Length: 113
Length: 116
Image 1 (tube, chains in turn yellow, orange):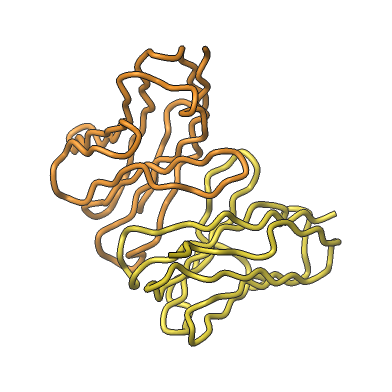
Image 2: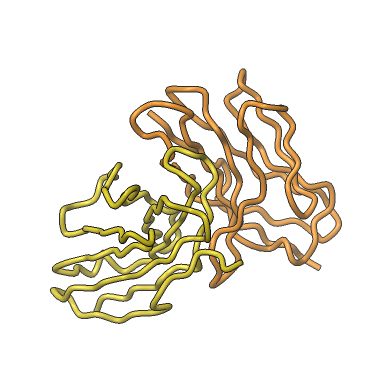
């Protein structure tokens, strides 16, 4: 049984560019959450998707957007990249919205130069 | 509001000695609490969770934590450290109801170093 998978593993972008990160949830999970982990910090909640809709959002600007597909996979899009967007982006899945236990993928390391 | 304070950013122990990683939480509702571990270049792995059952929770790899409501604490312990325990540990809280149900709030992490 595959766990949560994310792609790509690493990414280097230039300021002002746009980036798309992808996540496939664990089998049987229909809820996907995204977190940003800056260097030396704990992960910060970006948003959560369930039934192809954004259900909750953390304190992130509109430059951060997402999507969930009918197969429950998800994308995180970041527009107009800033140097401060450099971080590890983690995807987590859970069996249904509101449940406590979330399973994390290995993350995508984004570097903005 | 929900928040977590990990009281130590770094903890160093010798192999075979006890481990104590401290965590205090704040929550508007009865919380669920977790400890996650993150090894270098790897994702977060759930060590253990408290969800309103027994206050002493046993996790993987010999770790356990005790939920103390009166002290709003959820400290992580292990009787004997192993070299493989060296990693970053995160205390996490989530409310059991309310508008942010299912959202995880992470502490800043405690880096555990284990000396041979």
